[in-house]
Image (tube, rainbow, N blue to C red; front, side, top):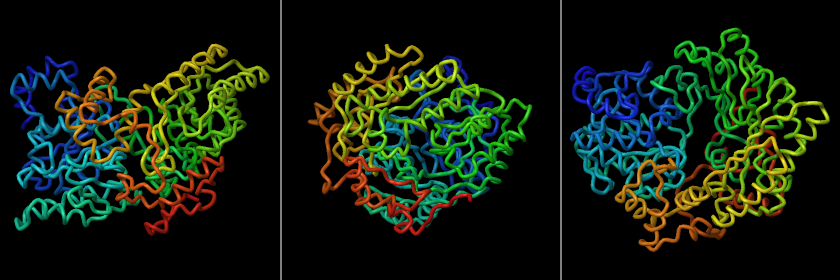
Length: 595
């Protein structure tokens, strides 16, 4: 559909909706190919609002890689807000992709990015609005292949009835391989849909629920060519409105609650010169005045200070600044603080995760109180007066003394400031609730009940009164319980997700949309106990719903790490010494460090 005819057809709807810029496409940096001339068409769907999805780096990678090929087309779709859905329905209009303005059912492959469990019902609603059958078993060769990738595919069971195939691991190569294979097999016109799914299940990294095949994750090389240096610039401010450059993938710290560190092994660092050149090119192509050096732990890169020195020199007096995600206190020096400061000062984020040393050892943080305090004081001395700490409560084996430690840590920072003659910083503590995740040492652990978490929150609020320069932000414990329920759920919660969708559940990751009563009433109707399942402690010999998915880490190693947590024993990071988790041997790979 041409842009002018699109505005004639949808103009009245766009004028009535709250944020029409979400739905018009045509952003600077978007790729506008002719739909009919490309015979292999991929639709990338992010089941959340435009301003969230357009910031997702994984989607930027896939969008860029597919569209670099002349014979392939990749378009985008983000979940529309409820007002736009109502307007489409009132005017008998269909959902459409941003660039081509074509209905999703016209594409060959529709790929969903599953970043968060609370988006599951949104996926079903988007299928409905695309006139695609909700259940995989109801689709035939006239329908597109529905695939899903992202961290939530670490446990495909909850969404197995609705997705044809899940991609496990890195998506760079596998997305193109699935697209080409599916189009080829359809064109040959010899196989049924189920037979095609069987053939796709033979691709490494593809899990097909119909087959229930044991699946080993896919690993991609972090080449210069596989990194975007251009991406669509949103029409209005998104949550990450900056150029993003990936420093490294994977994290050898292996904190026992962290899923991302375990499912993204081995560590792979980009070369320093590649990072510097990618940043320069991305900024030049997009015009952003800020760039983010992305990693699970940015200052673990062996040459982070050299990278920042080169970039600061290049961007000097331009007003272009750097953003570093959460920092490792043991690697954060005054030199790094000055380099990260760049042209502008902002908040420094440090993640102690726990308040006491015994709890940091249990979760394998490999971080001492002295290192946290020294990093904070170093930041304050270098002009950073806003500090953000990340903490997690409800961790396995946690006591109230561990909660005391959160406030005691802040008091010690203040004492050091007083001793050094420094002004107290403004401290914000972002406090989340522990959620046991698949493929981690804590996957067997129970989650605290909502009652237990609320008592801990009230306890911390009372302690806070003794410290004036701190603000506490708590994550919603109900949301965390629902996340725990779904992240470790089996096939038995597929019907639960379907019932929620039928009852109107949509964009539930937003508090204003979440109907908590509906979740618990629906579960009760189906004979499910959300709290019981969320707070369940799995047995060590129990078959887990996600056991068919292999990320390379030995299950016996994960279990041993859980036992070490009970005994308060840390594990050395794999950057320092191989800890025999199994990834490199099992996947015939190795870590890549820029040394």
